[in-house]
Length: 307
Image (cartoon, rainbow, N blue to C red; front, top):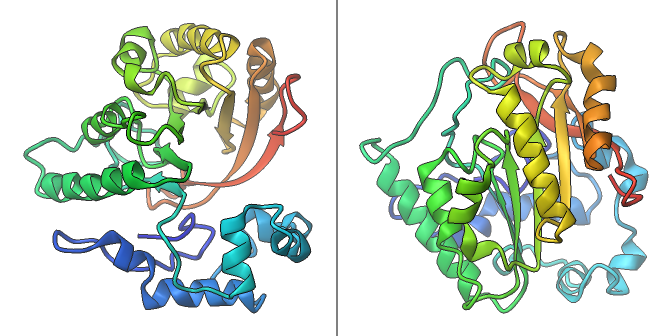
């Protein structure tokens, strides 16, 4: 488990989850407390100043006076004012413990990955989801759930079932971010997620890694460009109707796609989506196709000044 993006925090994990673990004990482990202390003392010694977008440009860090004035919420003000290293359950969860995906992009993996019920760690992952759902549903605060930076929420049996079990009657303040390659983000799959349609806020981040079909065939192995473009029209309709609040297209910039950047931005502008260019790092795939991170440069849509 990580308290932040692994690449941004130099792979300093805060503990390993196993079948008997309590995730919230890990959340306040000695390692986790040390990371929080390094934020309070300003050293950020566990963080990557090269890859973390906030530390790469320190002017974007939150101002201490604003935090103490409560401009970022009472919870953060209390934590910072009292230098708390033991804190309550997080209000932002980025779920990345299932690698299942319908694509096998060279920047991410060497082969198709699909975790099914006969997988040796399937039940362990299910128990983790049970703990997460219980925490989300009993919270009296807004909780943002992001699914997923590790695969695809529509292709993962675990994550798709998790999304279908989110109960707005138990916590009406659930916020959802869908991180997807978009190939399965169509009307039939969306209809099956009817339980979250009434969320007050849903964002969708869709990774294209290309601006044309020829490049897409290289960067998104197993994808379907024609279906993806059709799905983008469907997704734009969800945004226009107010069901989705923000839609962002992503590109991890690589040797074989950087020339597509203008066309990629053009696709975003055509649908009035935001878009971001992301720096690539090694995820242990091939030497010529290292993996990805999220140190980003944003291009806003015409709807907002924020990327």
